[in-house]
Image 1 (tube, rainbow, N blue to C red):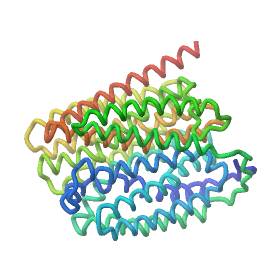
Image 2: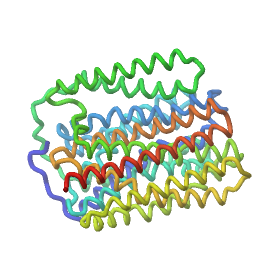
Image 3: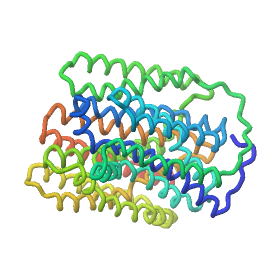
Image 4: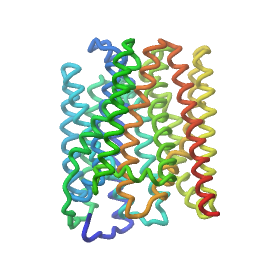
Length: 463
């Protein structure tokens, strides 16, 4: 940890958040920017939907690997050093992707992008939790979550607009100056920290366990779209064994690579699970399902598919910081949870309406309106769920909680996309889209149940 934590002035903090936030925004934007190009990629590279979706799920998977060790990285290295390594590598990966002559080269560039953004994205929340006033944590967390939750849903809009005027390679090229600009701003604002790293060995074995577990589970979800049930069963058994082995290893380690013992805190465990599910729904619906539904079922252009997302995203941009302020205000009265209840309920109702639209005629305007409603509900819930999770742990555990939540944010998106891609592959078009929406709606019901359970747990402790 830092031996001397420098305080940041308000203006300096704002500039740091703009710089690091811009890098994080582009990194999360690139998670789903290619999703609107998937039909084009399938034709150009002669690959299936199950294969091409790995451009997104692979990116999310490897970035979640790096986020696992974020808490250890920020203890050993300064924010400036980590940002330099991550941003420099990301710039190189964007060039590789823009010049890729074939699918393997493009996939390799995406994997490098994921590794680098797995370093950079959590630094936004490290800056917030390390330097933001505790009394305004809800507001600053809302700003951070606005950036990282909004960008994946905005990715298809960005991709569609670029395709309207250029080809898919420009999706990467146009990002280069923005990433470089964010890096320069962050270097100006971030203080030079004095690092007094604890003399601890890095838990390499635990890291390998977790990488294998996350990868195997991702393959398990993806394999559900194939007809070979033996592979699915073998992966399921392998996952079960890895969960058991990984948990035993973590319990034996004095300084495990991932602070899974935080899950013994029931409040944190409940809100973490709710956040994981809600983020999976967010990325799967806005970042994958709706753009591809508009193209593959309603036969709209990539530009229309991307533009249809924009009104809802603008609503979310405006509401999320306000939702953080409202949460700070209501939480002093013990009423903060009501924002999450209301938001998730609106999200659930919106998804039921979207499910009905999959059986009707082409109504792009109505779909856009329902997606606006969905984003309004999501704005009230998602950042406040993350804030509630952070507030459930001690201040000394904040870095570990951040690492878990950032890992969940990335990994859940990959799982969500893999699940809906699997359903579409098995059920076909348009039935696969309908059943995907049903599954996501059930996920929202689970979120509501978990939030209510968390609130009851708080009331029980208070009494």
